[in-house]
Image (cartoon, rainbow, N blue to C red):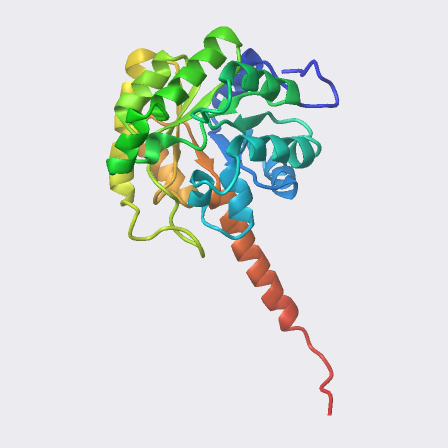
Length: 290
């Protein structure tokens, strides 16, 4: 599909992004979405053939060497971080694929209708609800909900983006109820989030579930979303879904049509490749000094 912004790539309209994703599926290919915390990550994610790039605060912290959960904490303005990465790092180097902005919708200091206009003007081709309160449970999660800073704010943001502003949305959910609510709000793609990614130097271990359990949770989310909109696209993410074979297993055992990788694409690749390359350099021959 030709892009009217020839030579620029982004931004795309909501319809154009959806058409691109449908075209990927029509070719028998999975939809692969990757989180990018730096421009160089985005550049080579694009070269690898990803369908979308998402920018959010966790990407910056992840590429600083910290756990992705740092993006959920009060270590910075998540919305400002997304906009900064987009403006100065990712949008200038990505040539063609759509770039999506992570939006912290519950920030009480921001008028979402105004902020979404800024996101659109920056050249992003859609939004994603990150940081997301969908993965915060327990007493703290309940307190967030009761103080009007919870998941409903994210749902309202998506409804505003899709119904009023015609902005593409790809959203995280952790439960069937959230999936149904996001589908009713008009979300274009749902990401079944089953927890922080395992593995590597800063991934979780005991906090994760097994792959079979992840498939069960993901399928329940698929069914809830499809009960509202049978055409909505569902992708898997997080927890034990780390490798391409893990993502393939989820696709085979659920109604997902692809995978969203952040730590599993960006962080793990850096950890492995830099370590191995450094070791190779360290093993080169040298004349011994006497």
